[in-house]
Amino acid sequence: MYLLGYDIGSSSVKASLVNAGTGKCVASAFYPKTEAEIIAVHPGWAEQKPEMWWANLKLATEAIMNESGAKKEEIAAIGISYQMHGLVCVDKEQRVLRPAIIWCDSRAVPYGEKAFQTLGEEKCLSHLLNSPGNFTASKLAWVRENEPEVFSRIYKVMLPGDYIAMKLTGEICTTVSGLSEGMFWDFQANDVAQFLLDYYGIDRSLIADIRPTFSEQGRVNAVAAAELGLKEGTPVTYRAGDQPNNALSLNVFNPGEIASTAGTSGVVYGVNGSVNYDPKSRVNTFAHVNHTADQTRLGVLLCINGTGILNSWIKRTVVPEGVSYAEMNDLADQAPIGAGGISILPFGNGAERMLQNKEAGCSIHGVNFNLHTRNHLIRAAQEGIVFSFKYGIDIMKGMGMDVRKIHAGHANMFLSPIFRNTLAGVTGAVIELYDTDGSVGAAKGAGMGAGIYKDNNEAFATLDKLAVIEPAEADKAAYEDAYQRWLEWMHKVGF
Image (cartoon, rainbow, N blue to C red; front, side, top):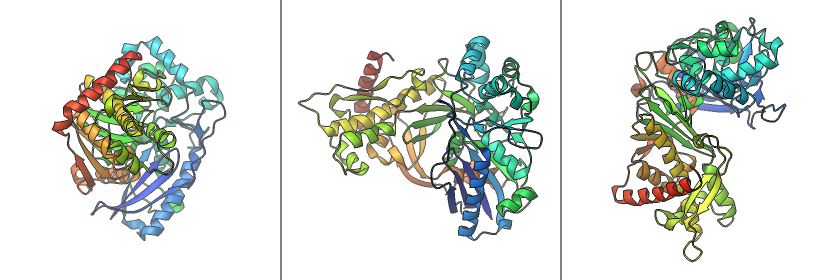
């Protein structure tokens, strides 16, 4: 028996087939092999054709079925992960009315900012847990004002994952988690955010029917079965946005647990057990995959633009050509904790939401030409990235989160022992590294939704834990001193 997981990204669509019994991935494929096209008609715009996602999903499905040799009758359930915050509009015949406005499109920013000021910051934050910002509801408001002929023909609005589920099953539905990421959910009313719909002039009928995240959300229809080579009637039993799904993939379900990634940019996604928000809106809060009216589970999302990109800049500009990242780690290890007094603020990749959307730039402080070498700079860069994570985690703690454990994939910055040890040392959290990805997580989520697994512990019992990093008590004071010095420089530059 197999579980099929899809991950609908803006770069590619990935499919994975997981053996439900062993929990192991037996086949994976992604398309296109080069980065998918993003249409930018004007500066700041970003659109994709939903039909392209479906075409690539078909190619990925064919590849994994051929590679695995699995029979279509052996697939028990399907799960979907998807790029968050997109807008797909369809008519009554389920035809796409315009290209999808995707997550990195910024045209709706003024609409969200005006709503935030007009409706009131306290009203928005206490009900939506966020500013309306550049999220899906604001994008729909842009369509209403600028493309009235399109808006008048809309039957339902969807997120990218809702669209894929519709193509698979012919049914249009969504989840509370999905509605919350689009700013369509009112956490005080535990219902669709009618006050924001009224402000934007959006009829509630455009919102899709709501299904639980883990539940049957339709079955593969005859048309999709023929296109994909799947069995008609196969249930779709899970869907979630990519960041909640990444947390699920790392078995992050409970308050105090955190899922983190640290590639070019970094993400810290923590689970909160109470309805709360950051009054400065420096982080985003959405319903997690296991949030219900009876069990509060909110995903608090912190995104830091200046993360691995600083480490790669150091590699390009500071170390000799040909030195690998592993060799850089060895060089950094020759410098002491605290990098001999050097502090680097890593914010050189655009405005940071964590810093209230200010563009601070990257800055290097405390260099002594008689003492410091490139080894100190390499270490200071990694420590500076970690300290930015700590800064954001402290915002989460201010919202009532008790951060005890960080789950991460064994990739990117988490490959560095210095990065991992510093993060554990300065936060006091245990770090667990795993071998997994989003499409595999979506497959296991489908197993939970279909009742094949009784809970997340059973679903992820076979998750490969590659390493556990405990905070080193002996180094605690050194890490804290280095962080406090970094924090002083943050205050001096205005944060």
